[in-house]
Image 1 (tube, one colour):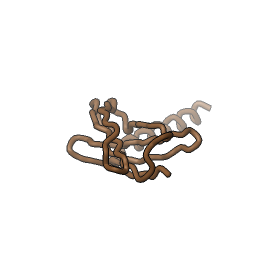
Image 2 (image 1 turned 90 degrees about the horizontal axis):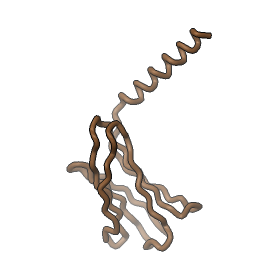
Image 3 (image 1 turned 180 degrees about the vertical axis):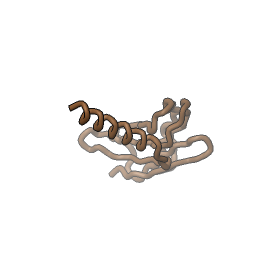
Length: 112
């Protein structure tokens, strides 16, 4: 029994170490949850050993920025979320943009 526990622990540790060592391309993605009347957007980046400050922007179909927020990604975290309610939002193609240092990451979603 102790050998099974040891092997299982060793395999788990190896997988965890490998998963954390892999590089992740920075990206943004949004999903609309109709049943919760909300839009959830996620920014993923490579984990770093310090708190990282990013800027998030929500841009309406008419290119007006309706929300700008500075957010802190805690050290060793790989992602951060932001959300808004969908009700009464302008219909059309929206843009969710993240500014991380001097790089910008964008995704689009449609509100019908």
